[in-house]
Amino acid sequence: MAPFKSSLARSAGKLLGVVRERDLSLRGATQQNRKPPVGVWDDTASLQATSLYTAPHTSSSGSRTYELLEIIAVGAGGGPTTAGSAGQGGFTIARFYSPTSEDLLFAVGLTGTDGRPGTGAGGAGWSATIGNGGSGFSAYAASPGAYGGSGGGGLTGVFRAGTAPDISQATALVIAGGGGGGHYGPGGSIGGNGGGSTADASPSPGSSTSAGGGTQSAGGAGATNQPGNPPITAETGTALTGGNNGNHAEDGWAYGGGGGGGGYWGGGGGGASNSSSGTNSSGGGGGSGYIDSTNSNFRAFPTIQRNYTGMGYPTGTGAGTHPLGAGKDHPQISPLGTEYGNSHQPGYLIVNYYQ
Image 1 (cartoon, rainbow, N blue to C red):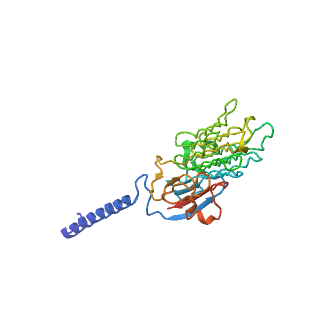
Image 2 (cartoon, one colour):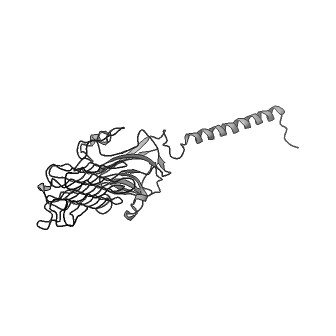
């Protein structure tokens, strides 16, 4: 015989069951609604940790605790010059979801070296040959290495990869471009500021031409040397790397131009000259910045996100326009005591971790 259950108890059980089902349904809906859609940052996430980088670093799978990242990248400025200032590095901020099982590579740009005298080497990005600025070396036959411009600054960025050869435009999450190097000689052409969707070109000083800044689709055009025989054009920037100047391998021009800055696309190399103690040589163009906003793990946050040309200093091609505030004034940059990203200064990388 089946256990007796009163109609009242049956009614109460049904009612309780309905309440439970509704409760579970509501809780599920609430939890689902709290999860932000793909591409949107979770406003409830709070800052858990911050890591600072002044040199390249491999963040191996399993080494991170948190999966929500805010990346703040400062590209390196172009190298030192006699008088004309080199370009500033760019400033980029973006947020991403990155599973802890994913390998990340952090590149931090160095400023270029002096070519008066010296090698005028471009500053390293991930390394001296990956993400680096272009050369400002002078190969002038009478005195090689004596009259060069300065090397371009290296890029700073974060890449989804496990090993250095995997660093490419296709694996880039964030890049802040490097500044173009300055030319040899007093006054004259300064280097173009790096960063932004289109980095700054260097001004044309006279008889050599301007070096172009990198864009989102091509490297900056190399400047043309002061007219000579044969006519020579400096190298155009390439993917991640700045172009070399117009006399890094040509011995017919004395006074070197600056190297292009590294970036998503590198800046063009500056033109060389033989007159006016280098006044007619040109600085290098800046390398462009980049945010992989088409990535499904990108998390939009309009009041935070930036991809700016320069850091807001008066050097290079000037302070520029920064609607959400210049990089030099960012609350995690300004207290550091070093003018990271300024002309002649290295880059910097900050990763804020949220949960």
